[in-house]
Image 1 (cartoon, one colour):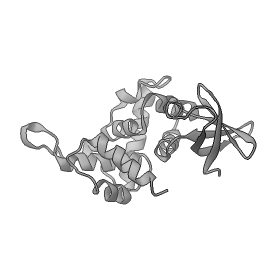
Image 2 (cartoon, rainbow, N blue to C red):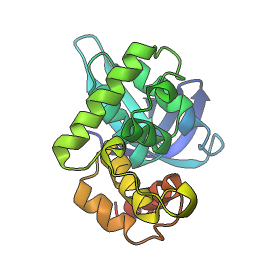
Image 3 (cartoon, helix red, strand yellow):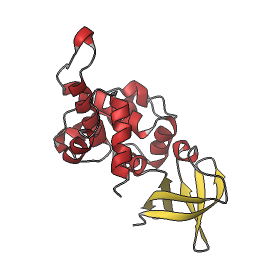
Image 4 (cartoon, rainbow, N blue to C red):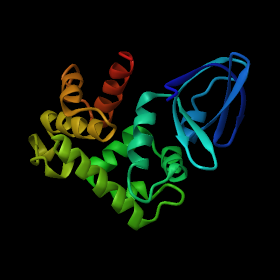
Length: 204
């Protein structure tokens, strides 16, 4: 397994980034989300990768962050979701948005991606939510309606939703809870996820 590629970005086209490492240009299939973050051609770049081996091809997928790679792996583990659909979803939604949508059972948001119809979106939301349940993290829909004054979601609710969403991205509930606890739980859920992903990414 190739964990990552680190070298010079020598070519970009829709869905593809080519990184030269040791004189070899590695073609990485990727999302629009990653392409939007890449430096100029000729500059240094690091992509986290997954190698898919089939009978007729070997495809290397590359992503700007471990969170996006984890999200891609979780998505493509769902029945009926191949690499092309996984890239389409991550071209439309950030890993944080995917995680929030799954944790909340929001299949409508997932269906915004090209090639993802309502039935497939519902399957993604259900299968990934079930996976989170088996890991021991509550899904957003199962959390008690933690409300503060005036019906505003409470800080505890935000933190719990963030832990559930991070579990969707492949982190264990224990490590997700430990990192989320480092931040102000009054922050919006998506911001808690973003900060937690940044903190966890710095450890690897």
